[in-house]
Image 1 (cartoon, rainbow, N blue to C red):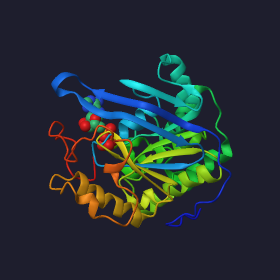
Image 2: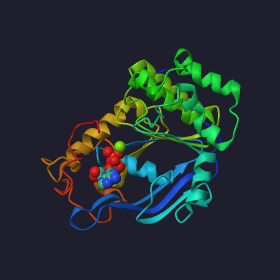
Image 3: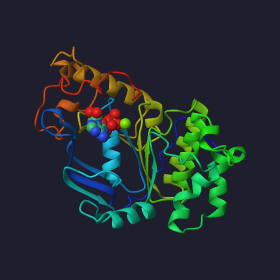
Image 4: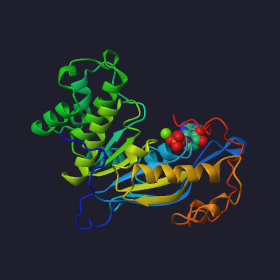
Length: 305
Ligand SMILES: Nc1ncnc2c1ncn2[C@@H]1O[C@H](COP(=O)(O)OP(=O)(O)O)[C@@H](O)[C@H]1O
Ligand SMILES: [Mg+2]
């Protein structure tokens, strides 16, 4: 499969509805003085059959957004829908079935079962659900991800990149409607990373799946249809039909706006694009741009978690 660096965004009829949606999505960890507001009243619509990327500094709430949208983590306030089904308030059993039938998840940590070999890990969710994989599709996934000669290896016998590819294959094996991928290329060399990105792109363009991907990499984000930018638990900006250069520029502007040394008027010097995050409607509370000192551990400027 060819995976050009900039994949064309093919025009299609606008699919109806959202694959996932949230209103006032709020998630706090802990309580009292040590409470951390990981998501602060987020409103978001994940368009069906589109590839959405989520970017933002470490600690900005990207993983929490994915987990709460996928029903893997409870919310403190607000509502989440998967398709037409509101999942906030669902009983755990119903939620488990919904996740199993409709969602594939690639975690930041691979979450592979150490006692199972690669092939068993890939088909585990389907085995649990009593579903039989589409053999042709499964073999295609395995070959495209270069796992053919690693299928009998257990996770400990695989490199980090190979484990990531097994996790990718597991998420794709059942062709779920909605795939959440948390930094799926973070541990891959650039060639394997491009393969995974090409695969996610193909899942959307050829198979009509919906992909939401967290990434730190502007080049990876450029494969998406829409980039959502998170800062301090809020969606502060978005960019349709992104390019790597455009995303990089936008991120630099955030560094100015959210950096500790930022001139408060820094955003005003930018005349090249649409209003920056300070003007975004998602920010009615108007917190100061500098990060609050309460959450120093995850707010380091390192791009990696
Ligand atoms: N289980 C948890 N307990 C306490 N705080 C958490 C937990 N998970 C995340 N957080 C905090 O919530 C904020 C958002 O975290 P996260 O969603 O992992 O950010 P990102 O994925 O953007 O790096 C961070 O301040 C983080 O420290
Ligand atoms: Mg994360």
